[in-house]
Image (tube, rainbow, N blue to C red):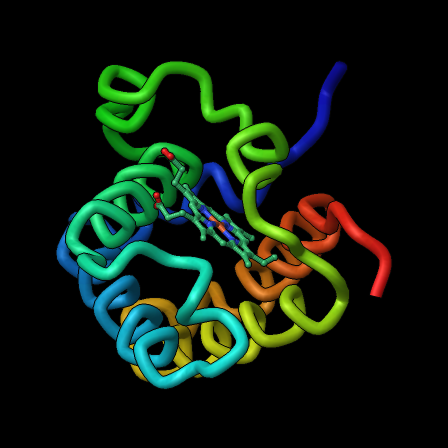
Length: 129
Ligand code: HEM
């Protein structure tokens, strides 16, 4: 198949890991204050930050450290312990969109990333509202 995946070239275009770590810092600063989502995450957010940064670096075409450390992403399976309905998905997207807006390195990729996150988050829905 010959499919073009614009997400897979973002890492090369951004050129370094730092903006991804900035993005997850911003995202989890939002999660800290999110009454709906905060209870789903562990008390210490250090691991979630690292997991998300490494996953995004790998998914956008950067080094494959995520899979070296955690194996195949299996994202739907990994999210099954957390009840995710439309409300949770919308809250996650609000936090991620705010984080994207706060990191200028992603400005040129915002539309592609918002679409990617929206599709991915919808795919993770695992309960009715
Ligand atoms: C739809 C709403 C979502 C909710 C409520 C949610 C919630 C969670 C929670 C509670 C964790 C556990 C924290 C951790 O161990 O890292 C987690 C892990 C993770 N999430 Fe989500 N998530 C959502 C959507 C997404 C999306 C859209 C992505 C990717 C684009 C994503 C990527 C990840 C990754 C990479 C991990 C770490 C998995 C691992 O290696 O164990 N999540 N998520």
